[in-house]
Structure formats: C-alpha cells, structure tokens
Image 1 (tube, one colour):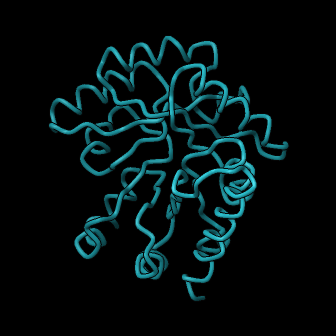
Image 2 (cartoon, helix red, strand yellow):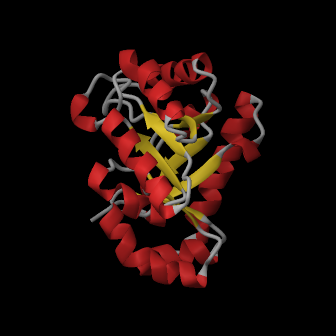
Length: 219
C-alpha cells in the first residue's frame, strides 16, 4: 500500500471538516498513532512528510523511535496512552507532548522528572467524559483541582484530552470537552480518532489521533 494515499485522504478529510466548521486547517495537528506498528509501516509515512506520531507505551516507543529519529530529527513524538508515574522520567526524555495527565501523583512525578531532565513537556489533561474509570482520565468534578495542582507545579498544560465511550455517538462528548476547555481557559483539545476525527474537528479538536485510517486495520 502506498502510504501517501491514506495520508492524502486523511488530510483531505481534515481540510473538508475545517471548511464546514469555518476553521483554518493549520489549527488542527494530525497525530499518526503508530502503536504496535513497526518501522516498515512508519517509514513510508515519514517519507510522505508526516512528522507527528503518537505512541501508547513508553517501552515500545523506546525500542523503535531512537533509530527513526536519527534519520528524521524533526519528528515530534506524542504519548497518547496511559502513563505510569514510575515511567515519568523516561517519558519526559523521549516524548515532546503527553496527552494523558490524569491524577495528582502523575503531576508530582512529572514535575520531578522535568527538574531532573531539565526539560518541560507540554501536557493535555485527560478527562473521563464518559465516566469510565477503566479508561483512565480525571473525573470531571476533580478537573479544576487537578489543573490548579498542575499549574502550581509548573506543568505546562496546553489543553484537555478525551476518549469517548465506544459504540455511542461521540459528538456530545466532544462538545462537552470543548466546553470544559473553554471554561478553564485552555486552547488545546486532543480528541477524535480514525472513526470520528471529522466530527471532533467540527467541535473544536486541535489534535486528532489517527491510527487505522493511516496504517490500515491491525491484524
């Protein structure tokens, strides 16, 4: 499969959704979610010009991205999966953005890691918009307190992230995250995946996390 073709199609659909929403496509960053994908799948997208990639696990990213980044040093790597506090330092060394800040213990771990590594990484606070604790994410009612803790710890919070419940129309959850971001003075909204990124864009997404639409379905 020519990787440029799915990438071009996703860009076309992003631009179409932005036109409908009267937004500038430059406001939306496409994060190519390359979790479980090997170099042979990632390289064609790199060659086609994609430069922002998302991974779910620190260990998996450590195994494959250092060599790829030697060849493509301008890649930005985003952690889009859950982060264990004991992996905070490794994450800060490797990633350029973290989408899953969701609890006070991780605020503390990241603050320590920033000091130790001498590097600050922008973060999205993940919100449990569907009240699904198994997914991770800060409870909505605890969001103001977590944001205050993050700001006090000098964590650069740039927005909110959500994963709506599966099998339910996602638009109300995207609209809810957009409102939460506005209410808390945050610009970024990390929301929307392969099946619903156009809807997310029309409801304010600034980062869409797209995997299978770019790489094909997983075996």
